[in-house]
Amino acid sequence: MKIPIYQLDAFTDKLFGGNPAAVVPLEEWLSDEILQKIASENMVPETAFYVKDGARYALRWFTPELEVDLCGHATLAAAYVEFSKLDGEVTQLFFDSRSGVLSVTKEPDGWLTLDFPADTYQVAVPPPALQEAISPVLAVGVYRGQSDYMVVLESEKELAELKPDIIVLSTVPTRGIIFTAPGEEVDFVSRFFAPQSGIDEDPVTGSAHTTLVPYWAHQLEKTKFTAAQISKRGGKLRCRLNEDRVLISGQVRAYLRGEIEI
Image 1: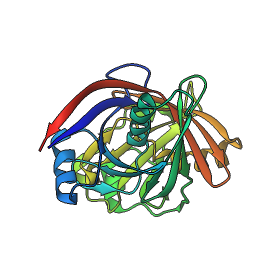
Image 2 (image 1 turned 135 degrees about the horizontal axis):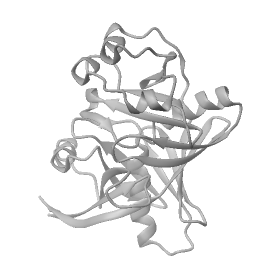
Image 3 (image 1 turned 180 degrees about the vertical axis):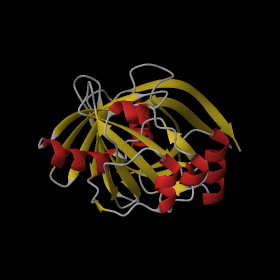
Image 4 (image 1 turned 30 degrees about the vertical axis):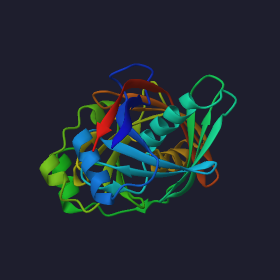
């Protein structure tokens, strides 16, 4: 059996930036075991698998270690692959996922916009391991969303210089930890660490912005934002809070196309 595979860089306008994702379109679902083995073999932060189902697509995401409920950059990459196959007049795709129906819209300027559910968060007492992992840095605030902890730091400089103890951080019971701070040239900046999910530091994390955007909307009293994830590869996003939805826009660059032989 030969299966097409693509690798793309999401949330960037240049190759070797943003967040790499593998995209595997399927005619029908393979076993969960095979899907996980493919994702583990790819060794990129996320592999998106999808099956066309009428006018929509059934979509699933896997890290090298496990299946996840929501992934922004791999959804962006999957939409890019499908848009490249379709008539240029098609400007919106719909994906059925563990997180409900997700849409991706192609904007006139070529950016792709994810429509994701906004996260709910609350003030949290940080687990001792979380503070230990970032010591001596002190958090301005710590919050807990549905999937992740979010830690607010004082400045972009402090966030850029942050070097958490990954081994200690991996013991925090969560999907991952979002770190954020006010931006110097954008509205806010972030970094995302998820050693619990097999990703020490994720280059650009679309799903984390479902928590970040509602938080910064409250702090900055606005609904439209420019954002940057300041990992080594880096990535830029445009975001908007629309009631209980978060619109997350980015660019994608294709890297390779090949075949998987099973």
